[in-house]
Each structure stands twice: as structure tokens, then as C-alpha cells.
Amino acid sequence: MHTQLFPADLWGRIAAKLAGVPRIVTTEQNVNVDQNCLRETLKRWTYKLADRVVAISTAVKKYTQESYCVPAEKIEIIPNDVDVDNLKSKISNLKTGDKKIILTVGRLVPQKGQKYLLEAFSILKNREGLELWLAGEGNLRSELEKQAGDLKIDNQVKFLGRRHDVPTLLAQADLFVFPSEWEGLGVAVLEAAAARVPIVATAVDGILDIVDKDSARLVLPKDSRALAEAMELMLANPDKAKEMAERAYNQVKSNFDIKVVVGKYENLYQRLF
Image (spheres, rainbow, N blue to C red):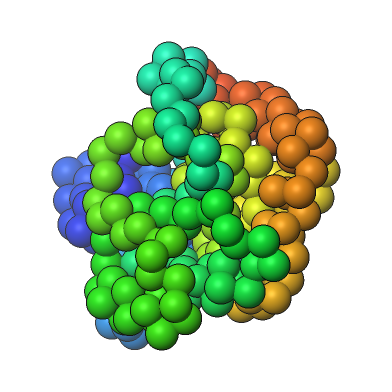
């Protein structure tokens, strides 16, 4: 039995144990710093029923050890994946117009740090000819829209809502920015790297499993000015940005492609059997 996400983890682990299933595997997907005490207690208790825990990143492994008292030897890191070839097949040269597009993809929630991106965009020295696209939905949307208006950048900022055509957006983007305060593993960063879009991101655990200082511009979280400077550097040096994007692509292809991740799960299951 392999469970994933809270309801399946809670009831699935209990049901599997009661049914006599000989091996129980579970995947931990995030650093859940905002969950309540009851949920954390239930997860800690039922984790004792699992034979192996898959953490999607080093950050999630550390969090699982500390929050749920799971021994390190019981945890394996197997990341989330991206189907690099499939993503590549969906991307064609769809660039239209002469504006440079800065794209971010993620839920509009505090964790994702979009308010710092709006602040950073507002202080860019050469903002003329740029647009900022925010793909995603969440409870901060109205607050972020108001912030864009207060910063007088609302004519250059597009809130795209929930999208199911991220490859199309990536094909039009000149720069991908991911300003999260924390991450389990930034899947949107995986997709941007697989699409060879230059990346600016925060240097937080979960993102640092994907890219490094040679494959992305990395800044501290919650630092709007540093974020703006990193964006300026990438936009002003397209050749260097392209070189870094190629490194990010190769890192993702080698470590996060669906074929690589499937192989890791196959290996785990075979060892457990």
C-alpha cells in the first residue's frame, strides 16, 4: 500500500495495517509549517505504521524527521518529477509581440511570496516594455491586485487565474521568477527549467534541490530589492541567462525526469518486496 496526502495517509495507513498489508509506503509532499496541532499529532501517530517514508526533497526529509519523529533511516528522498520530453513537445515558438514577459506560477497564498515579486517589479529600473504574469488562484488575489494598483503597476501586471496550459505560458516567458518563502519542492521551477526559461528564485530548501547559483539567480526570501536586482541582471544579460537556463535544463533532465523518478520507485518497491 502506498499512500499520499493527508486523508489517504491517515485512513490508508490504518486500513492497511488492519487488513494485514505487509508493506506500507507513504510520501510526504511538503513542509507543512501552517498545519494545526491535531493534524500534526495524527500524522505523527500513523507514521509509525509505515515501513518506508518517501520525502520529495532534503527539506521535506528534515521536516519529517523533526515534526513526526520519523527515524532518518526510514526516509528515502525521491523527488517529484517532470515529463521533460512531453513538456518539450507542447512548447513551440509562441512568442507574440515585443514585450518581455516575466512569469510566475503558483497559488496566491503567503507561502509563494508574490507580494515581494510585485514590490520588486515596481522598483525595476527599466520597466518599460515589460509585463508581469501571475498564473494561479488563491485567497490573496484581491489583496495582490490592490497592491499592484497601489504600486501603480497594474497596467503591466496580469493576473491569469488558474491555468491548465502552463507550457504555453512558459513558451512566451523571457524570465521565470519564483519568490517562495519556503518550499517542499518547487514543481513550477522544474517545469521552467525543463522549458529552458531563465530562472530567478529564492534560495530556500526545496528549490536548492533543483537549481544552484550556476543555473539560476538565487536571492534570500522576502528581499524585494535583491529580487529586483537579480531580475535586472537576467534581463540585461540574455546570453548569460540562456547559459544558466541550459544548465538548469540538464540538471532537471538528469535528476527529475519522469523516467529517472519511476526508476527510483521501482527500486524502492523491489527492495521492500
